[in-house]
Amino acid sequence: MILYIHGFGSSGVGSKALKFKEYYAHGTLIAPSLSYVPLLAIDTLKQLIEFALAQGEKVHLIGSSLGGYMAIFLATHYNLKAVLINPSIKPTLTLQKAKGLNYYDLSGFEWNTQHLTMLEAFNVAHPNPDNYLLLLQKGDESLDYREALHFLSIKASIPIVSFLKRVATTLLKILRANLRLWMRFLILKINI
Image 1 (spheres, rainbow, N blue to C red):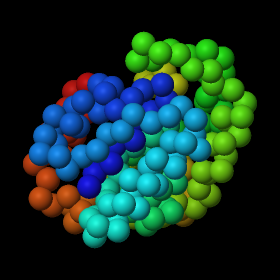
Image 2 (image 1 turned 30 degrees about the horizontal axis):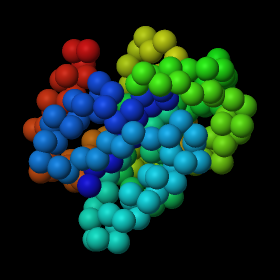
Image 3 (image 1 turned 30 degrees about the vertical axis):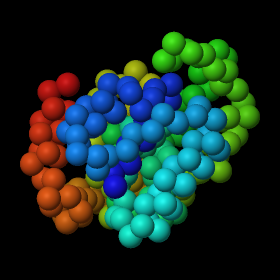
């Protein structure tokens, strides 16, 4: 199972989720619409992961933005591989400005200090760089790509070149059957 974890204020029918669903049209990808309440979102993801693992399935994660932050936590908790797309590394700081009423999917929700506090419980101090493929893009209006680069290379105490080689090797091992699909994704990502 490949589990796509959307970012803040998005859903399982957001543009990235729909692209992944299109590529994985045969049902190997799950892209749930998660609660904006961090504890509820993580609980939902844990239930999905634990169910799949109990069935003997391999689980891989794709996390975008805040979903990347959650993917780092889950990959560490369950020793899973994850593709991180512009992951949020310090969401308690970057989401300060989101406090108040927010709208998405034609519905609204209130983001507050309690939600920010909940996110602190999912902080990972020392991620295993072997578990991640990091896809970064300059120019994100909310996230500085250099934070993710720094977090996953400096805190892991390995040079970034070595990190990228390890990640590439790991990705090939995990997704060998889907390599052509990932190449299409990477080309698509570069062109966006």
